[in-house]
Image (tube, rainbow, N blue to C red; front, side):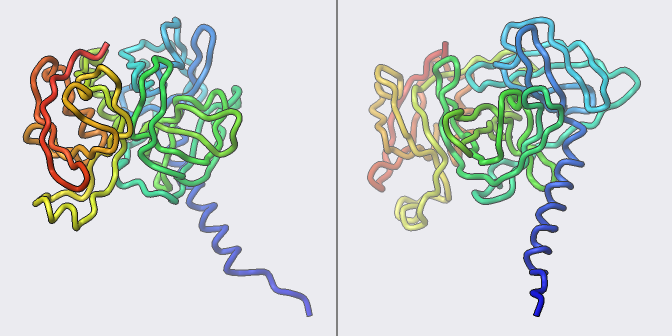
Length: 312
């Protein structure tokens, strides 16, 4: 008797294929190739008037910068602003009378470990290459070329190669969940992307000011769930907060008495439910101004006072 094909497995493969195809057809036209004086990478159009998001290390201080759209047009690009601490840069291209497709951001707080992730970019100059995998982990920290730690990093096993930097990581609806930034060359399946909420916030500031001035506490952290029992015991209406993974010696956080393992739940009167909340609240207006840090330590609520400094 001849064995029949596994219809269930085939249907599953077809469903996965259709999901990836839909993601690529939706977001792919917004992906661009970026060429600078001595390097190349990827980027993604995120507004209809020609704004492109990419990695800071792709453009660095190199000029000129050229952007090749999915329709084959190559245009000169202006660098609107860049932020080495988050490895993000915003470029502008003049589209003229011919419009280009642009990609929408997803809310990275809704991203879940195990969901399908699709990377689109230009590895080794092979334009519009696609790889797919899953979200392997959330809330990673990654050291940038400036020596700072980026928080709220998405880990994926969607394969990245040189040239993918700056391209989008998208969900099955074609929405950007991250901006691809790095891979570990000696490992397999260890690739990283800047979460879309961080990218969207940084991009808005770069568009407005061309740079970002930040207040500085001197910690690295990751978003973690807060157990219901601990939240109830401390009268908290929160489900997540920021776990402190490291405190820099001599930093404002260290001077305030913050320790590794503390959980930050609030800054002054505002709740801190995620790393991007902390990034957003530590703006230039808080430089030199005492702030109240509400924390959980060993399950108990405490308040510390820190004085953020200018991040240099």
